[in-house]
View 1 (cartoon, helix red, strand yellow):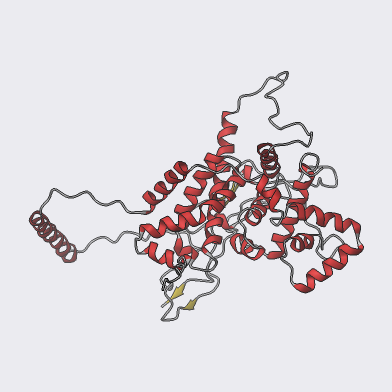
View 2 (tube, each protein chain N blue to C red):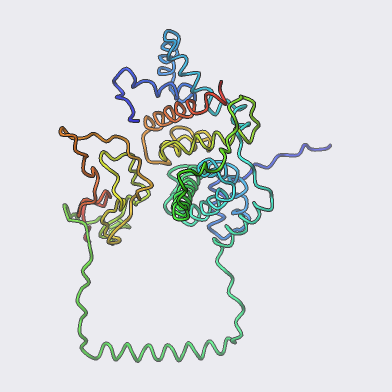
Length: 194
Length: 229
């Protein structure tokens, strides 16, 4: 009699972390594969740039796993990882702003500057246009508000997990998410939510 | 924009976000549901929140980031693995016998130095002056306290300090704090600080810096005092 295949449960994060600490390279690969997309989403939303986001993911994984002693299982590994990835992304963003500021060349007053890359507000946008609008609107938010919003919306963390990751209260998370959405909504109103 | 007073009429607005995300408990959710039923303005704000909530999967799928290809992922994975895996030492051309000879020689030299060191008086170097936090309380450590040997334990670092708003002008030099671990620890740079409210004085003068580093005013938390065995 044929037996039905029994699905094997994937090992928990704790099991993988223990195996990683014992030098199991396959455990590291599995953790990376499990969380790379969500880490990338968070980093991309904070940076708006694919290559920089990959750098932040790389730095985030390395730092999160190198400093597991600070994690100590107080939250889920995902919460810890996204906290570190978002730190790395914000650090990279600051470095990039400083680099860009140093490289900036004074523009003559009569120079009209580069054409606005944003699409006209005709309500007929493709995916890339919409994404660019959202990235630009997110970049206009204060850093703390943006980080809180992104950890919830793109990181998929609950308010409690965001609060744990950032060391703030749930009320503060709720307030930041509310006002972030209000500002985004105001910026996107004409083109995305007419 | 400063968040409103939670006890004021706008203080309950953030609950609309919690309601849209299903994060409120049953009682709080019921109160919000009753509120939006009777208040068209609140109902409109709730619709705004729902449009940007993760539950609006259609919107978030539309604005999904461009995904890297597998080659890019593989490069990142390999780099992470390389940085976390200690490099395997190359095979040594030395034989075990060479090592034994070298070890015996080194041990002999070290022993001779130790004997010489113990046999003669030596000038004691002056104790290094180290910056330590002000002692406000001292208590004997428990025998089983694994941290007893540490005089000061850093509980919060620069990344745990969040400067959200400054009531005066953002200083050009950023913010720094004193730390026993290092002389000056950067907390934020001018680009990290958002100037939220600037209120001129009664004569219209511009305010001075509202948050400046002061010696001994480190926004860090340490253990209550050095522990002694």
